[in-house]
Length: 255
Image 1 (cartoon, one colour):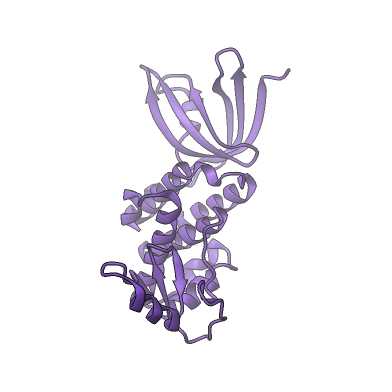
Image 2 (cartoon, one colour):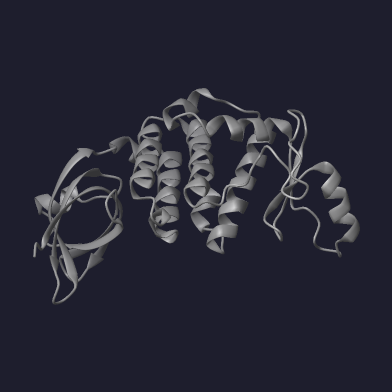
């Protein structure tokens, strides 16, 4: 039985382990999340290669007796050094990595998850500050789709009616659903105090979220939006993911 395995992988997090080793977490196309030990001191060639956001071909040795994994080699083809050159890029990249880790790599969506994460980090690598924010929202919204939690922006979750292009929506945190205006009024009528809709979405925010569902991350720097609608889109993406994960991540506040 083979103990050596090869993966297409993205490094998400690296932390010290003992005096000279490190623990690394990877997102792989083949098995989702993988945790493995990187042996070697500060001058180790392997240690330099296994760094956050590096992506490439990963070799892992698995010891079935101890059920432990160690990194044998890592052939990096994407270093993404630009992520460290701008504060906004680094913060969004950190939010991307933590979201993937907390959501366990997107479940069974290994290839899809890795492709999305890699494309987002590639776009971030050269983005300016405003574009980095939009790319962060793009990731959160698309990741909600990977998790199967993204609500339908084209219809009311209550009555099922297809919405017109200029109709607004309301998102209820308690029900984790999008309501049309008529159903929102009925909900307000029957709801007790404190259960009012938490988020209003104008047509601009809805249209932008629909548009980014079908374009690559590399196009996001060229797809702008007014600040008010962008804030609404960001709040919805965070609310949907928070409902799925059971909490809001502190790193999202930097997006």
